[in-house]
Image (tube, rainbow over all chains, first blue to last red):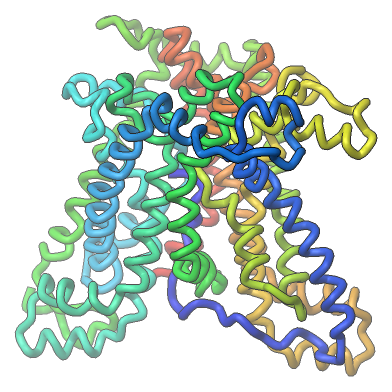
Amino acid sequence: MTSIAPVRVEAPVLTEETTPPNQQSRGRRGLVITLVLAVAAIFWISPLALLVITAVRPLADFVGNGPLSWPDEFTWSNFGDAWGIGNFATTYKNSALLALIKVPLGVLISAMLGFALAKLRMKFRRTVMFTVFLGLTIPIYIAIVPVFIMLRSAGATDSLFGLIGPYLAFGIPFEVLVLQSFFRQIPDEIIEAAKVDGAGDWRVFFTMILPLSLPALVTVAILDAVATWNEFLFALILLNSDANKTIPVGLLNFQGQFANNNTGLAAGILIAVVPILIAYTLLQRWIVGGLTAGSLKG
Amino acid sequence: MATVALSEPGKVKGGRWSPWLFALPAVVVYVGFLVYPAISSLFFSLTNWDGLSATYDFVGLDNYAKLPSDPVVVTAVRNNLIWTVVTIAVPTVVGLVLAIALNGKVHGKPVLRLIFYTPAVLPLVSIASIWGWLYNPQYGAINSFLELIGLGGLAQPWLGQDSTALWAVMVPAIWLRTGFPMLLYLAALQGIPNELYEAATVDGASRWQQFWHVTMPSLRPAHYIVLALSLIDSFKVFDMIYAMTYGGPGTSTQVMGTWMYFNVFQYYEAGYGTAIAVVITLVAVAVGIPYVRSQTKEAS
């Protein structure tokens, strides 16, 4: 569960247009900055652009004309080759299955804990909170050997389901941090009103807290899905057979096999990242909003 | 239970056990797969276990005593330090510059923001694959580009030689990690009231003075979050190194994380490998505690 940032979700997505400092007429200046940024952006995105261009040209064309040339001809066959040899049908299925089980389950149990921490009278609340948040700093390394032993004695190594426990555990700190801070902003009055009407904690949780927190739940779910899709170390250690590998581990093997087939390798890498790119483009607003909104009060 | 008063602010009336029922599933999973394994690692680090056999001896602190005399550990610590400094400093500064630029009157803001943030969502392993492919000594785009602009003399096997490998692996890490500070700073910049700049202008402050006396202090919370999270993240480096160089050539790109992995899973030194993991964790936790405390305090 790397590269995810714990944040608080509060406000709606950041506003697109704001007035810049010192709003004297600076059209010209803006144009220069735009140009500089555009050039920087072209460089920034060039690795991905090259990847796409390479993936759609024949290998002979790539070798003949060099990596930076515009293709003489185009082909889709690299994708077919990469799909088959890279075993992507299997690794895709595995990664998707894992995310489909892990993410909703993780969000639910984290939301439950977050609710207890934010809205219920709980003994040792700060201790629990501190211990759980401490998990943000704890690297996966520390758990690897014991988790490996636990799962081996349970016969759950080389099984997708064996990954769910550790994935859940390492996702919890981030999810709880975000969700409890969101729940905290829900006014107590409406909860108390429901209580007066006879609703129990569970009813309050399922019929009030969860629906009211939909934006936070979605943000957390998306970030968690990306993290689950990208996770490498546990998958590397716990999954052996090709039938059980996830996308990152599969991609690594594929890379070794295709070392000399540059166009096929490009197609394979692209196959592995396309779902993330599509999801990210579609869900951008949620991700950007979730990463930034309200995280700055610290 | 009946004593739980409605007047208690911020708390809901409910049974004494109710909070624990809500907390139970997450706590069980967290303790079972994180806390308990972390504690048993402390135990394994005091043994000479090979990771396979049923028996092992208790060796006290021998594994820890061995660390400073292990030349690879010395290299790994050095690499971890370089990695931490560079992959925090560069993305933070570049992210801040991009955010300031994007906060001005710029056309195509959403597209630019999308482009600069995109690498941040890609799987690390795919980023490693992309850059391994770009660095390829024979058909890599990077050497080709150097030739194209007349610097062909600089072309070299970036990942294949001690002198450049670590730096070459840091480039994709920077590429990946610039997006987050950029987004965070962008959001923070939009929260700075315009009046501050107006007042500064009235006082005759130059743009540079405004940056140092208005922008930077207003960004303090953002700096704090960016630095805390980057620091926590940097200690965990593994994927990129493993996937791009496998710690090589030789041991030139080993970091503590990869060296732990190799000891446990290649050299069957689970006890020693776990001691390495314990050291990384202690450092990471020590560094992260102020951040964790601030989060806990604020939530109370």
